[in-house]
Image (cartoon, rainbow, N blue to C red; front, side):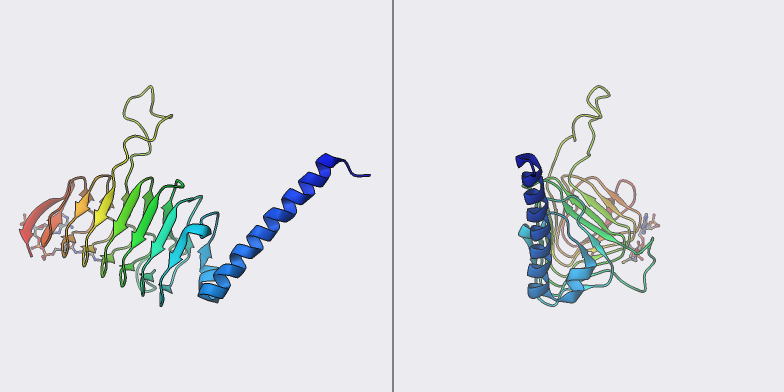
Length: 211
Ligand SMILES: CC(C)(COP(=O)(O)OP(=O)(O)OC[C@H]1O[C@@H](n2cnc3c(N)ncnc32)[C@H](O)[C@@H]1OP(=O)(O)O)[C@@H](O)C(=O)NCCC(=O)NCCS
Protein backbone atom coordinates (compact mmCIF):
# COMPACT_ATOMS: atom_id res chain seq x y z
CA UNK A 1 0.00 0.00 0.00
CA UNK A 2 1.19 3.49 -0.83
CA UNK A 3 1.86 5.88 2.02
CA UNK A 4 -0.08 9.12 2.37
CA UNK A 5 3.16 10.97 1.61
CA UNK A 6 3.74 9.25 -1.76
CA UNK A 7 0.07 9.79 -2.67
CA UNK A 8 0.41 13.50 -2.08
CA UNK A 9 3.65 13.63 -4.13
CA UNK A 10 1.87 11.91 -7.04
CA UNK A 11 -1.09 14.28 -6.71
CA UNK A 12 1.26 17.30 -6.66
CA UNK A 13 3.08 16.09 -9.80
CA UNK A 14 -0.19 15.45 -11.65
CA UNK A 15 -1.46 18.90 -10.66
CA UNK A 16 1.74 20.51 -12.00
CA UNK A 17 1.46 18.52 -15.23
CA UNK A 18 -2.16 19.54 -15.63
CA UNK A 19 -1.29 23.24 -15.08
CA UNK A 20 1.53 23.07 -17.65
CA UNK A 21 -0.80 21.53 -20.26
CA UNK A 22 -3.63 23.89 -19.40
CA UNK A 23 -1.46 26.98 -19.81
CA UNK A 24 -0.16 25.83 -23.21
CA UNK A 25 -3.66 24.89 -24.34
CA UNK A 26 -4.97 28.29 -23.23
CA UNK A 27 -2.20 30.04 -25.19
CA UNK A 28 -2.78 27.91 -28.25
CA UNK A 29 -6.52 28.67 -28.25
CA UNK A 30 -5.91 32.39 -27.80
CA UNK A 31 -2.87 33.06 -29.96
CA UNK A 32 -2.16 30.16 -32.30
CA UNK A 33 0.78 27.91 -32.90
CA UNK A 34 3.38 30.58 -33.46
CA UNK A 35 3.12 32.02 -29.97
CA UNK A 36 2.90 28.55 -28.50
CA UNK A 37 6.27 27.50 -29.87
CA UNK A 38 8.09 30.82 -29.84
CA UNK A 39 7.45 31.86 -26.28
CA UNK A 40 9.32 30.07 -23.54
CA UNK A 41 6.60 30.18 -20.98
CA UNK A 42 7.61 29.79 -17.37
CA UNK A 43 5.18 30.88 -14.74
CA UNK A 44 4.04 34.20 -16.15
CA UNK A 45 1.20 33.31 -18.40
CA UNK A 46 -1.59 34.27 -16.05
CA UNK A 47 -0.48 37.89 -16.51
CA UNK A 48 0.46 37.76 -20.15
CA UNK A 49 -1.46 40.00 -22.51
CA UNK A 50 -0.64 39.77 -26.18
CA UNK A 51 -2.34 42.07 -28.69
CA UNK A 52 -3.58 41.15 -32.14
CA UNK A 53 -1.23 40.73 -35.07
CA UNK A 54 1.93 40.42 -32.98
CA UNK A 55 4.79 39.16 -35.14
CA UNK A 56 7.45 37.05 -33.47
CA UNK A 57 10.60 36.36 -35.54
CA UNK A 58 12.89 35.28 -32.74
CA UNK A 59 12.39 33.24 -29.57
CA UNK A 60 11.08 35.22 -26.62
CA UNK A 61 12.38 34.27 -23.20
CA UNK A 62 10.49 35.23 -20.11
CA UNK A 63 12.96 33.59 -17.71
CA UNK A 64 11.56 33.25 -14.22
CA UNK A 65 9.42 36.38 -14.63
CA UNK A 66 6.33 36.40 -12.41
CA UNK A 67 4.81 39.79 -13.21
CA UNK A 68 2.76 41.30 -16.01
CA UNK A 69 3.83 41.42 -19.63
CA UNK A 70 1.56 43.46 -21.87
CA UNK A 71 2.38 43.46 -25.58
CA UNK A 72 0.31 45.78 -27.77
CA UNK A 73 -1.23 45.20 -31.17
CA UNK A 74 1.06 44.55 -34.14
CA UNK A 75 4.25 44.64 -32.13
CA UNK A 76 7.14 43.05 -34.06
CA UNK A 77 9.68 41.09 -32.05
CA UNK A 78 12.92 40.01 -33.76
CA UNK A 79 14.35 41.02 -37.10
CA UNK A 80 15.69 38.30 -39.34
CA UNK A 81 18.00 40.54 -41.38
CA UNK A 82 19.82 42.01 -38.35
CA UNK A 83 22.79 40.52 -36.53
CA UNK A 84 21.97 37.99 -33.85
CA UNK A 85 23.78 36.11 -31.14
CA UNK A 86 22.61 32.51 -31.05
CA UNK A 87 18.94 32.45 -31.99
CA UNK A 88 18.59 36.16 -31.30
CA UNK A 89 16.44 35.47 -28.25
CA UNK A 90 14.69 38.49 -26.76
CA UNK A 91 14.36 38.52 -22.96
CA UNK A 92 11.20 40.21 -21.64
CA UNK A 93 11.21 39.62 -17.91
CA UNK A 94 8.92 41.29 -15.38
CA UNK A 95 10.80 39.61 -12.59
CA UNK A 96 8.64 39.97 -9.47
CA UNK A 97 4.91 39.40 -9.06
CA UNK A 98 4.37 43.19 -8.98
CA UNK A 99 6.69 43.94 -11.95
CA UNK A 100 5.18 45.25 -15.19
CA UNK A 101 6.53 45.54 -18.73
CA UNK A 102 4.34 47.19 -21.37
CA UNK A 103 5.18 47.44 -25.06
CA UNK A 104 3.00 49.83 -27.09
CA UNK A 105 1.33 49.04 -30.40
CA UNK A 106 3.47 48.85 -33.57
CA UNK A 107 6.76 48.92 -31.69
CA UNK A 108 9.58 46.90 -33.26
CA UNK A 109 12.32 45.25 -31.23
CA UNK A 110 15.37 43.70 -32.88
CA UNK A 111 17.32 40.60 -31.88
CA UNK A 112 18.82 39.98 -28.44
CA UNK A 113 17.06 42.91 -26.78
CA UNK A 114 16.79 42.56 -22.98
CA UNK A 115 14.09 44.20 -20.88
CA UNK A 116 14.15 43.32 -17.16
CA UNK A 117 11.75 45.06 -14.77
CA UNK A 118 11.74 44.78 -11.01
CA UNK A 119 9.18 47.62 -10.92
CA UNK A 120 7.80 49.12 -14.12
CA UNK A 121 9.20 49.57 -17.62
CA UNK A 122 6.91 51.07 -20.23
CA UNK A 123 7.79 51.32 -23.90
CA UNK A 124 5.54 53.49 -26.04
CA UNK A 125 3.93 53.06 -29.45
CA UNK A 126 5.78 52.99 -32.79
CA UNK A 127 9.24 52.67 -31.23
CA UNK A 128 12.26 51.08 -32.96
CA UNK A 129 14.66 49.29 -30.62
CA UNK A 130 18.01 48.18 -32.05
CA UNK A 131 19.64 44.81 -31.53
CA UNK A 132 21.37 43.98 -28.23
CA UNK A 133 19.88 46.93 -26.42
CA UNK A 134 19.25 46.49 -22.68
CA UNK A 135 16.58 48.27 -20.69
CA UNK A 136 16.66 47.74 -16.91
CA UNK A 137 15.04 49.52 -13.97
CA UNK A 138 17.35 48.26 -11.26
CA UNK A 139 21.11 47.82 -10.62
CA UNK A 140 20.66 44.27 -9.27
CA UNK A 141 23.49 44.80 -6.76
CA UNK A 142 24.37 47.34 -4.06
CA UNK A 143 27.37 49.66 -4.32
CA UNK A 144 28.20 49.07 -0.62
CA UNK A 145 30.65 46.14 -0.59
CA UNK A 146 29.08 44.66 2.56
CA UNK A 147 25.62 44.48 0.99
CA UNK A 148 26.57 43.93 -2.64
CA UNK A 149 25.57 40.30 -2.89
CA UNK A 150 22.46 40.66 -0.73
CA UNK A 151 20.34 43.52 -2.07
CA UNK A 152 19.25 44.50 -5.57
CA UNK A 153 19.98 48.22 -5.21
CA UNK A 154 17.52 50.99 -6.02
CA UNK A 155 14.58 50.36 -8.33
CA UNK A 156 13.33 53.30 -10.42
CA UNK A 157 10.77 53.09 -13.23
CA UNK A 158 11.83 53.50 -16.84
CA UNK A 159 9.60 55.02 -19.46
CA UNK A 160 10.17 55.33 -23.17
CA UNK A 161 7.75 57.57 -25.04
CA UNK A 162 6.12 57.07 -28.43
CA UNK A 163 8.04 56.98 -31.71
CA UNK A 164 11.44 56.71 -30.04
CA UNK A 165 14.32 55.19 -32.02
CA UNK A 166 17.00 53.45 -29.96
CA UNK A 167 20.11 52.34 -31.90
CA UNK A 168 22.05 49.10 -31.50
CA UNK A 169 23.73 48.13 -28.23
CA UNK A 170 22.28 50.91 -26.11
CA UNK A 171 21.90 50.56 -22.33
CA UNK A 172 19.02 52.35 -20.67
CA UNK A 173 19.40 52.40 -16.91
CA UNK A 174 17.01 52.85 -13.98
CA UNK A 175 15.03 56.05 -13.59
CA UNK A 176 15.37 57.14 -17.22
CA UNK A 177 12.47 58.67 -19.15
CA UNK A 178 12.88 59.26 -22.86
CA UNK A 179 10.45 61.71 -24.45
CA UNK A 180 8.43 61.18 -27.62
CA UNK A 181 10.22 61.15 -31.01
CA UNK A 182 13.74 61.14 -29.56
CA UNK A 183 16.67 59.17 -30.99
CA UNK A 184 19.45 57.47 -28.99
CA UNK A 185 22.68 56.80 -30.95
CA UNK A 186 24.25 53.37 -31.19
CA UNK A 187 26.26 52.22 -28.19
CA UNK A 188 25.01 54.95 -25.88
CA UNK A 189 24.53 54.48 -22.14
CA UNK A 190 21.54 56.47 -20.98
CA UNK A 191 21.84 57.34 -17.28
CA UNK A 192 19.59 60.44 -17.18
CA UNK A 193 16.29 61.34 -18.79
CA UNK A 194 16.21 62.66 -22.34
CA UNK A 195 13.53 65.17 -23.38
CA UNK A 196 11.23 64.78 -26.39
CA UNK A 197 12.40 65.48 -29.94
CA UNK A 198 16.09 65.17 -29.07
CA UNK A 199 19.07 63.31 -30.51
CA UNK A 200 21.20 61.96 -27.65
CA UNK A 201 24.46 60.03 -28.03
CA UNK A 202 27.46 58.83 -26.08
CA UNK A 203 28.52 57.53 -22.71
CA UNK A 204 26.80 58.92 -20.76
CA UNK A 205 24.22 59.97 -23.36
CA UNK A 206 23.88 63.72 -23.87
CA UNK A 207 21.56 65.64 -26.14
CA UNK A 208 23.52 66.89 -29.16
CA UNK A 209 20.64 68.52 -30.99
CA UNK A 210 16.88 68.86 -31.28
CA UNK A 211 15.09 67.03 -34.04
C1 LIG B 1 22.20 58.50 -33.96
C2 LIG B 1 22.62 58.64 -35.41
C3 LIG B 1 21.46 58.17 -36.29
C4 LIG B 1 22.88 60.13 -35.59
O1 LIG B 1 23.20 60.42 -36.91
P1 LIG B 1 23.43 61.95 -37.38
O2 LIG B 1 22.18 62.76 -37.25
O3 LIG B 1 24.03 61.87 -38.73
O4 LIG B 1 24.41 62.56 -36.29
P2 LIG B 1 25.79 63.25 -36.55
O5 LIG B 1 26.65 62.35 -37.33
O6 LIG B 1 25.52 64.65 -37.06
O7 LIG B 1 26.39 63.32 -35.08
C5 LIG B 1 26.29 64.41 -34.24
C6 LIG B 1 27.40 64.29 -33.22
O8 LIG B 1 27.17 63.12 -32.42
C7 LIG B 1 28.25 62.18 -32.53
N1 LIG B 1 27.64 60.86 -32.61
C8 LIG B 1 26.75 60.40 -33.51
N2 LIG B 1 26.38 59.17 -33.20
C9 LIG B 1 27.05 58.82 -32.09
C10 LIG B 1 27.08 57.65 -31.29
N3 LIG B 1 26.32 56.58 -31.60
N4 LIG B 1 27.86 57.64 -30.21
C11 LIG B 1 28.62 58.72 -29.88
N5 LIG B 1 28.63 59.87 -30.59
C12 LIG B 1 27.86 59.90 -31.70
C13 LIG B 1 28.95 62.56 -33.82
O9 LIG B 1 30.30 62.17 -33.79
C14 LIG B 1 28.79 64.07 -33.83
O10 LIG B 1 29.71 64.62 -32.93
P3 LIG B 1 30.46 66.02 -33.27
O11 LIG B 1 29.35 67.05 -33.41
O12 LIG B 1 31.36 66.25 -32.12
O13 LIG B 1 31.16 65.81 -34.57
C15 LIG B 1 23.83 57.77 -35.78
O14 LIG B 1 25.04 58.35 -35.25
C16 LIG B 1 23.75 56.34 -35.20
O15 LIG B 1 23.97 56.06 -34.02
N6 LIG B 1 23.43 55.41 -36.13
C17 LIG B 1 23.31 54.00 -35.82
C18 LIG B 1 21.85 53.65 -35.55
C19 LIG B 1 21.71 52.18 -35.35
O16 LIG B 1 22.23 51.61 -34.39
N7 LIG B 1 20.94 51.51 -36.26
C20 LIG B 1 20.71 50.07 -36.24
C21 LIG B 1 19.70 49.61 -35.23
S1 LIG B 1 18.09 50.28 -35.37
